[in-house]
Image (tube, rainbow, N blue to C red):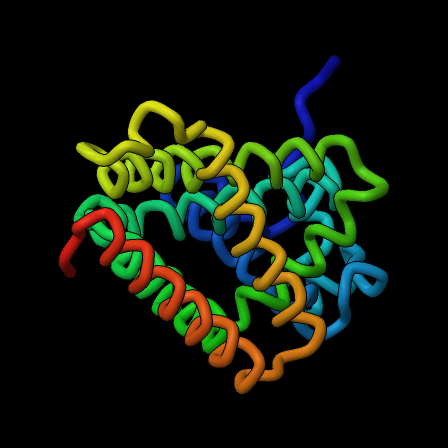
Amino acid sequence: MAAAKPPKGAPTSGAAGAETRERLIDACRACLRDDGIAGVSARAIARHGDLNQALVFYHFGSVDGLLQATATEDSQRRAALYADRLGEVTTLAQLVAVGRAIHAVESERGSTAVLAQLLAGSASSEGLRAAVLAGMEPWTSLVAAAVDRVVAGTPLAEAAPTDEVAFAIASLFLGMEMFAGLDPDHDRAASLFASLETVAGLFDALVGRRA
């Protein structure tokens, strides 16, 4: 099968092609934020990025391919951005504090709205669903390592199913991000984090952990 020809005027060099791919992913994010998953199309994405819509198919094969790339890049960006902070966590209170910080930054960027729309789209796309699930893996690994440090040396070290706890925490955060995208009630999120901080403080005191 012959390789797809680049659209007229499309950059062909490696650096220029990579820049175009990033512009398309940025345009896809903007389209998801402004129009929702139901409004996503090659034409709509091209309009948001002031690009030729044929570039979507040249670089990603399909609109779904671009959505998958957007989901993958966003999850990798988050993991890289917060890996160091999660790597320093040794108490449950610190883990909740990192979660609060991530939520605040991602909400400000509009990433929560994008994530909510990607999740909605994954219901009808196996490829997108796989990309979103794969994006959870770096998070669950980082959280699992943090949970191991939090319970290390306590009676829970042997009893706590770390992977399951990490998945539950990651799922809770994902759910919060999804609802934040649908109903950005900052007071509700702040109240939830305040409650989690209280519980975390009690837990850390019981197991002898200090912030």
